[in-house]
Amino acid sequence: MKYEVILLDADGTLFDFEMAESHALEKLFEYYKFSESYDILTEKYKKINIQLWKDLELGKITSKELKIQRFRRLFSECSLDADFCEVSSAYVNFLSEGTFLLEGAEELCKYLSGKYRLVIITNGIKEVQYARLENSLINRYIQHLIVSEEANSQKPDKGIFEYTFKKIQHTEKNSTLILGDSLSSDIQGGINFGIDTCWYNPGHDPNIKGLPVTYEIHHLLDLKKIL
Image (tube, one colour):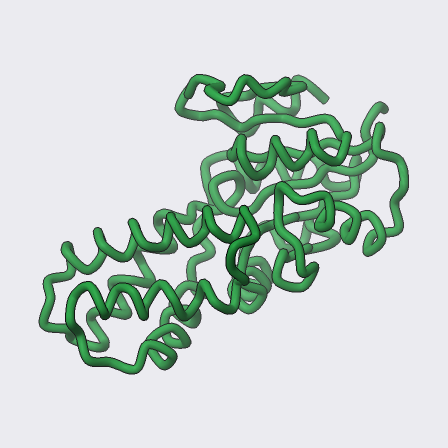
């Protein structure tokens, strides 16, 4: 057996983040009954949020700042009068309910469990990620959850991988594989750290970054064939 540890990305790889996000925003905007329409608020929020997560990957902001800034900017753009700290806290609670899994995620984790050490490594907010995993169908198969907020580092930085190896008491890079959907975060992070990578690419997107990916799959269960 070549690999001993499989590092798994969370959102977009195991969890359906778009569904969780839509669920949380719908409940949030329904609760606060803002004057702006749901569609307009959602569209603007997602644009702001995507940019802030890119800034987080680049180390320009912290996850704590991200949680607040996305609503501060949204309310400023829409001229809404609300306590963005309070709204941010409510949104995190609603997002924590989003345990929706992508097709094949549960079956894959069940198959890998017992054969490999399964570790989720995610750029995220710890209260959201811990709650979602704990209440999900894959919790029983995951041995460790590593969240960037706790590691004080995020993918693609080496720091979060060094933190992970120390946390799980593993030292062999050549026996470790990372599976993720993001070239800039998961795959670049694995390359930076010197471990094998598997790009989950369900949309058959081109590798525009030209990264030397070890494996590429288009369905989660395709990983079983590789291993």
